[in-house]
Image (tube, rainbow, N blue to C red; front, side):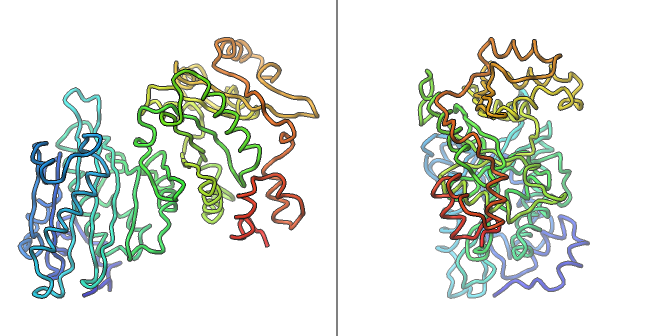
Length: 474
């Protein structure tokens, strides 16, 4: 049995949350379970209230006590409960029970689903707003393998009841979207906010998998989360799969390099390697407790007022091929990036950047939107745990580093203060031969079919550009 999508566009314009739940309930072949932990049974209650749920809801449960939850789903390695691992176990376990208790032979047309969420709402002191994982394992054809949609959310509301309510609405949107919007995953993402204030809840990670989504690139969905203002930062690993930024950054030292990476050059590679070597010599740093991030701002992806998605994917493929973790943000200013990292770690944060970028950091006009101006920005940027590692540049064959770079006259004392306090440190042992390499020049050579561009970028990168014909290579 395949779910019909005929007439959806007009029909869905009229759908309330109750209508969506009722539409699922009235489809006699959609049948599944609900498992909700931490924020009440807020999703399934919409299906009960809509009516006709007896043909849809096989079981609903909520194992609030940790001992009961562990007895059902097992104990996590980190002994936490609001995790992706816990969500996976909930979906797998509940689907296994459903298949074991509802014989396929007697129900050949039933399209099974398992919905789950594991959530922590705002704490009593209201210091921690709360977050959670939500997902659905489902099929739109009874003979088909299961597909999944999983996402991580962060609450921005200030009371538990409101958080529970918005969670319930988003859960209904997810289930209805899975069945009636699965053929348009990028539209489905926007649809998740139907009847929800976009400031109430944030989606910072989402992944689609399974046969319904074989042609979906989750990196593009990550980009959509940024473009649609659903979150400020997304991250994906070397395998191209979206990962939760908080999980990658939590209690870690962080080394981040911002760039356009269009394409990745030997300069980028040298900046990273020399920065990494420097911090590994410092107390408190080792490979296990340090996360290396290659960051691209949304503004770096925009050309002629639009995001060039193919160009974005080209850059992503190259960075992933080098085994890098990539972060896309809408933080044009470095102080916002510093603030973001400090939400997840109290350990060291190292920002590796070139001379041009540092000069921009000390431009007052950069902070016109801030009430406290540049002083407020610098208070957030150069926190106790933040250091800038500076990669030099050549200007008319003269080497420019932290000792001789020129900032605005009004900023000279401020700059001197941070340099004297070792918040700005020059990168040592850099390869001077690489300083004449610029990514835009490499890009022009690739597009124009010129020779020699391969000498300016890592071998693995040049091989992939040729093989995949990236950046206009022919």
